[in-house]
Length: 361
Ligand code: PMV
Image 1 (cartoon, rainbow, N blue to C red):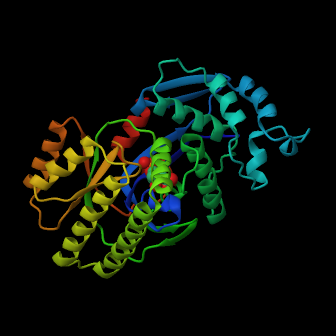
Image 2 (cartoon, helix red, strand yellow):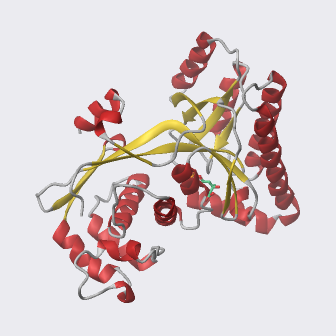
Image 3 (cartoon, rainbow, N blue to C red):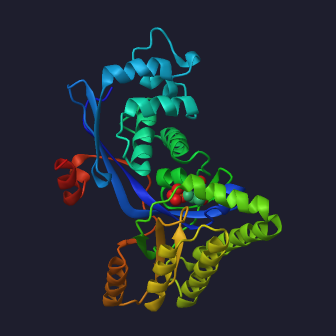
């Protein structure tokens, strides 16, 4: 199937506004980050498929023959053809993206053979990999149709991880840039400004599935209270979109001040939805002490937060903020928004540090 090394990368992403509300049909604004995850697919003749995820300490190998056996029972009967040599190709060639069934996920758990003490996030990463590996036929060049397919499969990977995703995460990682997303409808923001941000990982583990369910329960319990919060978050996303559209190439300080106010209001709303966490409060307080505004991004309950860096901020001040966040035990990266989506690379086009890291695996 794969005759030579394939190098692929996808951007990290953050949701600027609209997390959780997007699950309930509201608008979300999401941006791709200039922090990328690289993937090297390399053919070898050991008869095994090796998965190495160095950042989360996963190194596993499975017999291809065993996976192919599983594959025959894995795919829906109508997708099987007696002459189909490569069953991996079936789904994709027919443009048929299938959602993982609970039975398939159970079967994958058996095959994954992960130790009982394997953390949930690592377990889900492996299950999503196996599901997609068993379903996707790799190509070397991507057309718009291929990207649409990648987006659909990435959505199914998200379903393995958290059941009922809105689709915003896979969309922004596939297409890159800055997107407005509502109920599967995606549009790119025209000329978004190159905002600088801090992305901070509190390292507090959380379950997106449980947090999304928590918001749903709160909405059912207090519809009169929670529905207006979701409507207000929707309005924040729309106002942010409007301001970003006006900022263009020469943003004014007043526009940054509006973005900061929107960040603060949304952070309070997210707390009211019950998806805050003490670590996120700490993140907001620490950055506030340096005159900067932050909010959680994504599911909350721990996880990551974003901090807007205003223009004119001196680098020592940025470094001092990063140090203060690191002192809390958090990981912190300074980056910019609006990166390209999923991409194929030739080895020579890669940054030498990335090449070295991949070669060292
Ligand atoms: O934390 P993440 O990256 O899984 O983002 C979740 C975003 C939610 O809006 C909470 C859920 C979704 O599917 O959109």
